[in-house]
Length: 112
Length: 112
Image (cartoon, rainbow over all chains, first blue to last red; front, side, top):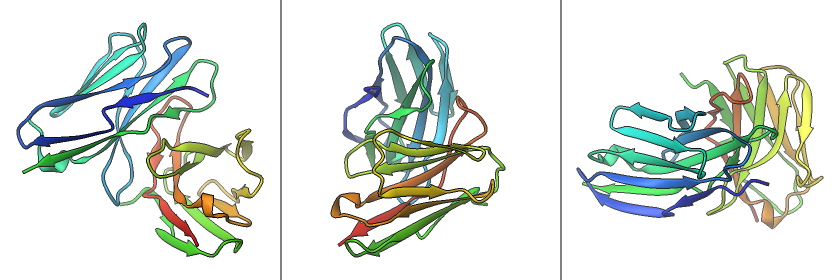
């Protein structure tokens, strides 16, 4: 079992604020990391697939970085909007593993 | 158009009464996953299929069974649900081990 941790568990920000949260995973034998956004009553939706140390990915106002040597990834949201309200999940895969292990997610609420 | 569909979206069942959850996909992906997510916990993999090759996670209870009659459909059978099986059940597909997973919206199961 891989221990994937996300912090904070929940977050409330004002519209327009920028925010970030963390995904920590074991660095040994790392292979890939996924970020997903899960809005209430909808399907989790893929944001990023990250594999290389130093990777930086961007999708609109959302970006992510990856540090495989120390075992963490940051997700940043610039100028948060109410539609960004969702749970953000990360999941990690090792080279020898056959499944992604998920964190418990960060629940983001953007207050208009 | 929805690519991964789960039915029903909500299911209430009685303790011990068998229940079947279904998942269908239009993506023609070989790999399908079933996850269980209990309140405030990370999604936990129950089974996965690579084509017809079935893989049961070691700690998945015997009470949980799965069928995949063809590429498009996959079923999760809970033979004798217990109160502890109350959870969100997510189905996901992917073209490959490292690739993005495409999720359905989940079935929220309540066992009374």
